[in-house]
Image (cartoon, rainbow, N blue to C red; front, top):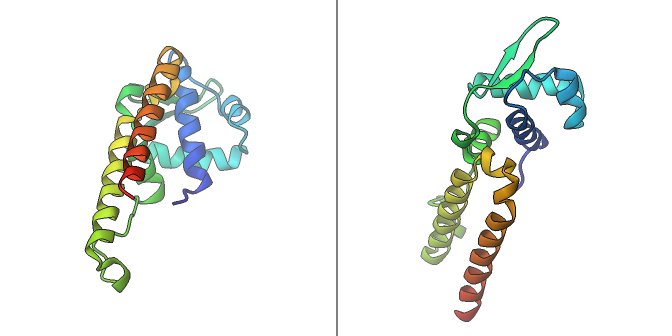
Length: 153
């Protein structure tokens, strides 16, 4: 699975704006801090504005701001908007996916990724106090699942 670079930049834009919630962030500052050209920033921010995530103030004191609390913005919604969805080929008509076990594996992957991306909100990505605990919990869970799957071999 591979996402467009613009999706990564969109997430970085939202994180930067979340870290600067109390003010309007000028486009030059935002562009420099996420290391993207002004022109590309305008394109990505335009998509975020279409989705209602980012507001734009025009003029000399203009810039960008988040329109929602960072706890209400999750990675799934960002990816869905920027990528047009996230597709794992469950229930495909192809012969390769007609295998019941393979189809169930795709469904499980889809459920896992969807759940994980829905709970990963912008505030979780910006909260330094939660960072170590959160990462440890996720790592422990993933390691446990991998160990469980390896035992099934």
